[in-house]
Image (tube, rainbow, N blue to C red; front, side, top):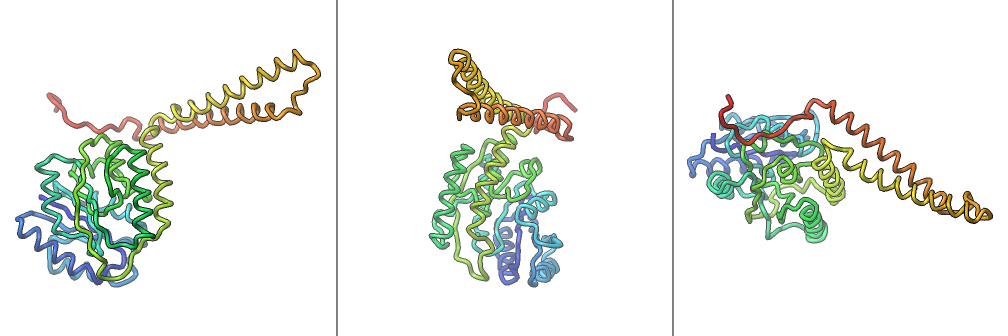
Length: 314
């Protein structure tokens, strides 16, 4: 199969028929073999009934319904498990992503050799204050931390090589960081394509400003896990050693000055408490590193690595 088109949705009953008909028109014109995977993330309207109706009309449409709202990351993760196309394209269900972009994204994966292509909504139709400005800050921070030069990490319109989506797990609110997860998994060819952003036709946005606050916390989490997930002692041990040495040096200095100047007290001097606190923090960090190593070395996936190719091995 050429393409799997993954669409997570939440209360999008009005837009689904138009979106699926548009996708069918585009893939038919380009002679793609395809499937559309619609993931209903606990909608409270008639979205699932609409999905079933579309499925009855088009056998290439598949549906997954969650018992309750789990979030976009969970929807993508389940759809990635079910996808069987050589190229997997994700898009939002609100008609703000144009299916006309599908052939271009497909070409960049198959012909140009990209592992992941992210859409860049260069011209947006969102509210400038509540979405555009926070989005620019979010993207700039993610670029700085991850080293991936993308303008729009949060764009729902993306294309992936099948091997990539079968090699990663998306959880929590990590869907906006799939390029970062892919990079940590060893997929290096990540690009972007300027795509059309359309004004919302039905309903209202399901995301608020709080997603950017959560986004920064998720960025810190995924950066730490990506770099130190299998070697936590390298992080905690380093800072633990630094704090302990600072406290130890200060303590030695205070003891020496106490011996030279007996009239000088210890417990009535602020540096004494600073040194004591630093040594305690350093010890705790060191112990956290040891515990992290024990957990990491006993985990089921401690030796799970992604192999690109083999030669002479059956």
